[in-house]
Length: 275
Image 1 (cartoon, rainbow, N blue to C red):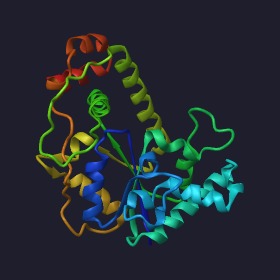
Image 2 (tube, rainbow, N blue to C red):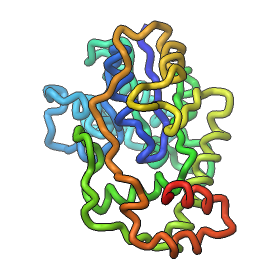
Image 3 (spheres, rainbow, N blue to C red):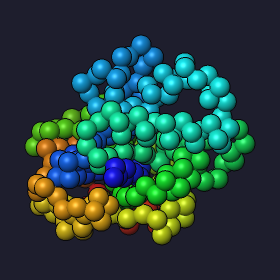
Image 4 (cartoon, rainbow, N blue to C red):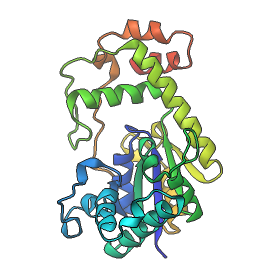
């Protein structure tokens, strides 16, 4: 039986590191973010691509599907759910492994919503995933300030993942304190919203706990044993390294940031990250 595991997370939560390790240890196909625009294009011969991220990109599949079945372009619940089922069927038939790890960020669950979807309503894609009983692994970060800075740092440098042992500090990061506070509130609200939606139907992991001194925790191993119903065939190791240097060396205006976050739940996170 083919097992599709959905890795649910905010950007900059360690999904690349975790996905790399799990995919090799459990022999799972790992197309990374299936809703990533970088791996999609209307002129791509995606089926013939040597890159699984292109072969399994949802947008490439849907573009081809709608050319042959244009009536599916009307976003009814039935059509959107049918598109996802056909996508799952396509990747299960096109890839050799019978295990998949699909990365779907918080910001990507809207792509299969329907005519009258309302803000705050459970995304139709999540409803489909739960109906199909796909296991969900919700990867979270306890320190949302560190997550926010990691995102801003990646946007500043253009470096989202690395195989290098260390990352250069380079230009320091100037944080817009008010925008940071608003973003942290939004991140917390989004995380809690997904917690409500998947309550009782997900395995929860925390970025801060998944690895110690370069070794993945037993919790990671047991989580994916449960997901795939099998033991790993190799140790969980990753070739990826942390991109963001210590934030105390990166953030140019720590005092301003701490002052703006004073009295909020995020102040302690910032103090901890900047220590």
